[in-house]
Image (tube, rainbow, N blue to C red; front, side):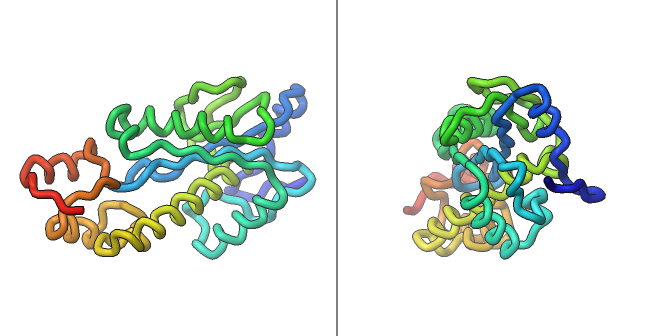
Amino acid sequence: MTVKRAGGPDFSFERAALRADRVPVAGVDEAGRGPWAGPVVAAAVILDPERIPAGLNDSKKLSAARREALFTSLQTHAQSGVGLASVEEIDSLNILRASLLAMARAVEALPRAPRWALVDGTHMPALNCTGETLVKGDGRSLSIAAASIIAKVTRDRMMRDLAAQFPVYGWERNKGYGTAVHAAALKIHGVTQHHRRSFKPIHKMLCEDSALTY
């Protein structure tokens, strides 16, 4: 059993669920709410209490190399499901609803259905189980931290693949976020089908210039 570390996530929320016979317990988190381009990706993870990889934490607090190593370990020692919401769904639903949809899809993709879900944030997606939301849950719950890693690594890989097709935007580095390189490329090359047209910077650009490339 993993021992709590000062300032990091622990297994206390999961243990409480286990004591209440809410088994299995899944942690749920998403990656990619803020970028201008690409899907939002969510993950759900059921940890084995006896085989929790050491070093799990909020994915944003880990190096890329450490995230990749933990991703590999989680593929072996945990059960996970991934769900995404497309750019079209983000634009039609809004980013919050699309994120919740991706979370629900991630839970549905688990190899077995959880009885309790620990969800990062303040909004509960529509799930076929009960659960609770945890603000900044990726820094409080090991299961949510694991989900944050799976979601982040999965989305980063997707954006690197898209960058090979659309190299001018620097997505392999900025992952679709609104960096100076990304903004400059948009002014020169225009908006692609992978950009979120409902996001203010992209919407403003489309209103100002109707000439699109790709």
